[in-house]
Length: 363
Length: 247
Image (cartoon, each protein chain N blue to C red):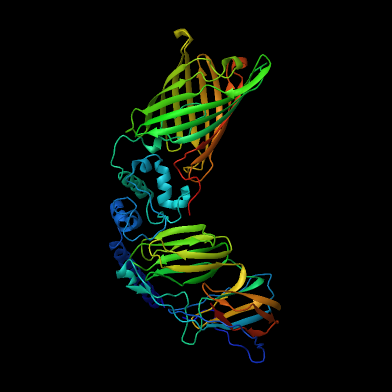
C-alpha cells in the first residue's frame, strides 16, 4: 500500500512537472513573439494606429478617430504625465478621449507606462516647451507660471464692515504665444456703491504678458510677467483706479510628490500718478493637492494672500467639470488675518474653459 | 459542438406544438449555444419547458476580405452574421421569456481566433463579466459598446492565451468590435430574463418556465421573426416553438 502510494506520488509529480514544463514552453513561445521593450511595443502595437513616426497617420486606418499628431509639441507638451499614463493604462475614456484607444494596463507594467510617456513625448523634437507636469491647477489669486490657452470667468463678492457689498465679474482671456509666452486680457464688470449711490459698469481693463524662464525644468517653473491696468473704469463711481497701474511679477510652480503643488507669485504695483512710496507689494502663496490623478479630480488648496501689511487666507476647492479637464470650476473665500475691517471678506470663484481642448468626451 | 440548450427531446404526450413563425438565415462556421436556466430560489421547481429550432431561408454571406495581418487572419474570413447549417438551421438566435428572471450572475467568454470572435454571440447576466483571450499572434482589442455607442470598455489583447475579465452591470445588447481588425463583430445579450441561445443545429431550450402565456423575445443580429411569437406554458409540459427568421 505504501509502495502504491509512493508510485502514485511519483506519477503525480511527473505529471505536474510535465504540465509545468509544457506551460513554461508555451509561455516562452508566446514571449518569443511578444515585444518586451517600449520601442518594440510601439512598433508592434501602437504604430498600427499612431504610425511609427507618431503622426497618427497610417496607410490602412482601422479606427474612425484620427489619433493626435505626437510630433506637434502643442499637443504633446501641455498635459501632465499622469494624464498620458491614464490613457495608456486605462484607455482613452479615462480622460475623456475616444474609446477607440484601448487600455494596455493588463499587459504593460506601471514602469513601462512611465517609459511609454517619455517615449511618446520625444516625438516632439523641440526644446523650450514647459513641461505639462508643471501645468498646475489654477489658484484663486496667484498667477500660474505655466502659459495657458484659457477663458476664465471670475465672479467676486466683497463684504467690508459698514460698507455696501461690492460685486465684480471679470472675463479673462489667455493665449499662448510660441513655446513659452502668453498674453492675457481682463475685462471686469463691477458694481460698487459710493456715497450711498450704487453704480455698475466696466472696471479697469487689463492686459498682460507672461514668459516662462526655465522651460526645461522638471520640478520648478519660473515665469516673469507684466500687467498693465488701464483707467477705463470710472473712479468717481468706485469702478476703477482712475489711473494706469503697472504690475511686474514673478510666478513659480513646484510639484511636491505626485499630487501636491506649491505656486507662488510676487508682484509689485506701480500706480502711474502716485509716488514711488505708494507702490504696493503683493504676494500669493498657494498650496494644493489633487485627490486623484485625473483631470476631473477635486483639488483642495489654501492660499496666503498678502498686500503690503495686509494678510489674508483663501481656502478653496477646485473640480474638473469634464473628463477631459477642459472645463473646471473653483470656489473659495478670502478671509482677512489682520486689518479685518479694511480687507473684509471676499467670496470668489471661477469657471475655466481650456478652449483648445475638447469639452465633451469622445466616443 | 452542439449547444447546451440544443438537447431538448420532447416527451411523448407532453408536447404541445405551437405554430412557429417564418424565418430565414445565412451563415457558416462552428455554432454553439448557451442557456440560462433558473436554479435559484423564487422559481417554481415545476414549470414547463420551451424547445424549438430556429431556421431561415437566407443564405450564407460571402467571405470578408481580410485587409490586415494575412499571416494570422488569412486572406479572408467567413462572414458569420448569418450562421446556418445545411438545413437552414440558424445559430446565434437569442430567445428570451419576458418577465421570467434567470438566477445567479453568469459570465461569458470570448476568444479572438483567426481574427474572429469565438463565439460570435454570448449571453450573460448583469453583474457578470466578459472574459476574453486571444489565440492569435497579433494585436487584438475587445471594444464593448452599448447600442447608443457608449463604451463599456476597450481592452487591448496583444499577448496570446492570457484571459482578461471586465464586468458589465447593465442590461441590453453589447456590441463587440476590434480596433485593429474592422470586420470583427460579436454580441453579448446582457439580460436578467430567462434566455437561451440557438446552437449550430438551430436548437434552443428554455427550462423552468413558470406556467403562463408569454410572447417570446427573439433576437438575431440581422434577422427577425415575421410576427410576434406567443406560447402557452403548462407545468410539467414541454412546448415546441420553432422559429423562422427573415430579413
